[in-house]
Amino acid sequence: MQKYSTTIDPDKTAKAYGYELHCSAKDSRNIAHAIRGMKIEEAKKYLEEIIAIKRALPTVYHKGKRAHQKASGPASFPKKAAKYMLETVKNAENNAEYKGFDTENMKIAHISAYTGRMLKGMMPRAHGRATDKNKYTTDIEIILEEVE
Image (cartoon, rainbow, N blue to C red):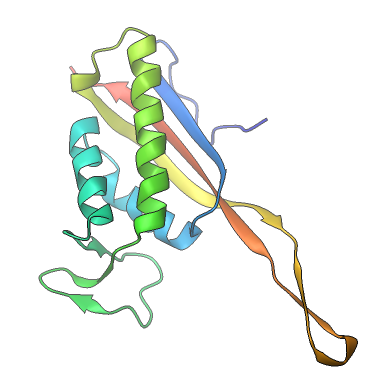
């Protein structure tokens, strides 16, 4: 059972949780930093532009050896992480609609992305040896609140 890292009044908010998503936690942190505080429609449009490689995501965390993009400095196009983030935002929007909120006036009050469970694996090597081949997952939590 997943737990949210913050508690906000449940009568005024809607939540969504992406659990063990197969995408980069580093890219997910950068996306979360970029869309924090945005309205839902604005965030969805931003993520769709990243997926379509029309807009670069400015890198705030883990900038080392990151290519510079026009007019945004060190940036990238994390399509896979943006796709999972978009699914989680849409899920939060549907939860808000189910609770009876006006989704036009909802903004992202809290968003965080962090590493999830590691799926262990191994790759056979020469002379009877083996190397770890682990898959890392990401957990994403989003809390929306209504703006007056």
